[in-house]
Length: 80
Image (tube, rainbow, N blue to C red; front, side, top):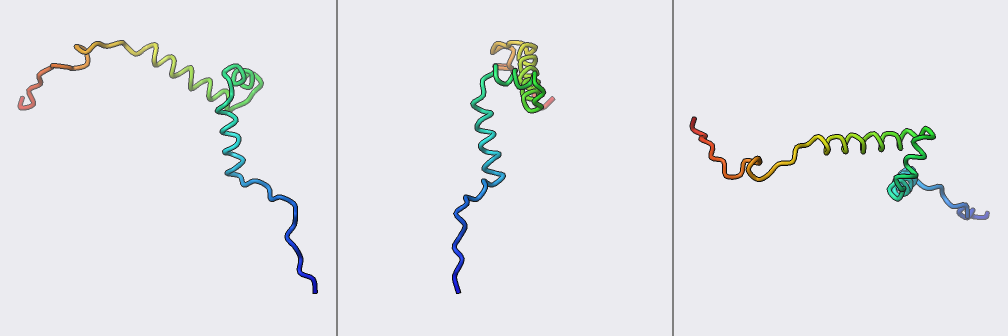
């Protein structure tokens, strides 16, 4: 009786490994590549651009403050 040997065909990568590879690839993507993919209908690229646009809008709207506006040196009566 012959003992069967393990197949020499490599196992397919796990879903986690594939997802990690895709995430790593996305992280290396340039803004131009992201914009191109978004224009071609890539949902992930569209979400990324929307999130970046929202962050830019929030940063532009946020007022710049000095130390005097940040409550530095303000006395508050906590017993009142």
